[in-house]
Image (cartoon, rainbow, N blue to C red; front, side, top):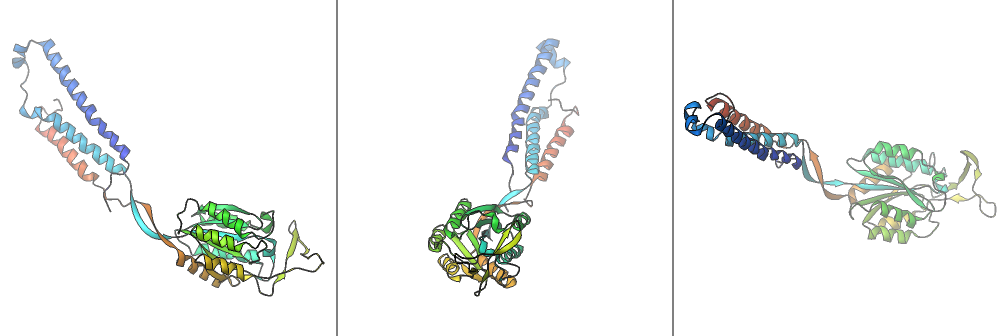
Length: 335
């Protein structure tokens, strides 16, 4: 660690030195004037005690003692120092698919809840990282900026339902554009996304989404949730199950997990694909994928273990004030 004076604003206390010097000069001038008023110069040598040689250096000692006192105060108030440390840190946005197909129950209790549980468990294994949440379907929006407050993230996540986004569909490009906007203050190469979806690509734009992510230095871990056999899509009104989604012919729509789009996005962004149907395995593989693509970044960290020398400054200051007191023949602080 390097020694630091901390907050340099405290150095303004050094302005006390010229102020003290001005006070000393004004005092000496006033004292001589009072002597002249009391008696003529030829009588002053007999009337007033002769100054010792030490009294001539006392002003300098006063200034030096005050200087070291100020330096001790500055160092004592500095409190902490900023130290550069290089560490691997994740800046992760969880990109959560909230299209209606995520209500399918081929994964218990349903795909959306499985995705939320993966996010919560993944955060539980992250340290010193920042996370955020973007939800998407036919449109996308951020519901949590990058933060280290995992508890708040989990609270917001608990209220996420498919109805949170009005326009349905699965628009990967619009989702990635929203992510890019949230990463604008994060350097390229330190941007990571965990995309949780059943992989249904209604817009057919996973390629431009992957291209945008690669261009912006974003590594994407994709998590596919849902079975190959698929399941019907429940339709709810005010939380009540009203039936299952049907097509134009009145046939029940079966939603299946589509891995191709998710794997393409992961491959083109130096990420990895994770099977999200098993909570424990999905969490472990997601963490592994994030660690693999984590970048080392140099950051400023405040340390309360700064090396301080205020005690030495204070010791010198006390010594000088004691010297003035002991060697002053009059045992006072007159100069």
